Length: 249
Image (tube, rainbow, N blue to C red; front, side):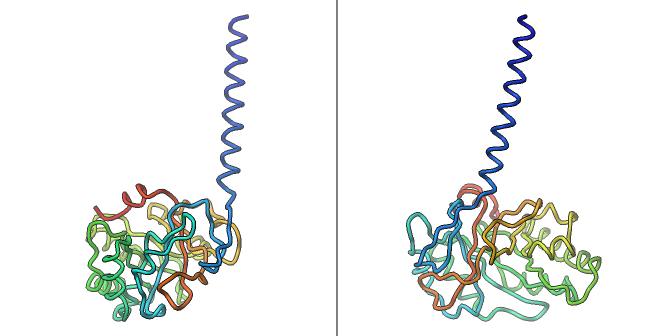
């Protein structure tokens, strides 16, 4: 009788554990959005760490105002800043944005807009010559979202060269920025070891993918003090400790 009771107890514990897991998964999949007129968009408040990404198109940014803005518990903690594009182009506002964002204490990340039709080593050199990443900065970002009519094999091979070159330089795995369709069509499981920053907006749910991601660009029409234009909004999937661990040591 005692052995039967033990078996029943074990079965009950397994059932309760399974039920708890299913409940947790259900909660994890639900994103709660709250409308904030100050930001001009519905914000996914399940996440604690919010950020923006900018380029020269945001014009002259008052980074102190960006840093100081807070609505309820939401404030801007990080910023991705465009540095370069292709093998010769450099964002005209990068240096100013980079220096001023750092001075006000925002965690910074720099990104490169990639073309599979251009020499990936020259693109890596272009980025490295402009973005002097330091300890405490986010890893370099490969913005890869256009195929330029290249086959997936070419896109994968050229992207790998850029990523591997940046990993040699900074001793951290670079971040990949793209959307789910592009990732699944042109990149795939070969790139699953890299941190992912995923673009997914105009639909009110988190990105639909089995691929784990760290950053989610959820809107391209947000508003923040200090920036006259609309701006992309992002969240980080983790807390401030996780974000610090991701940065270059």
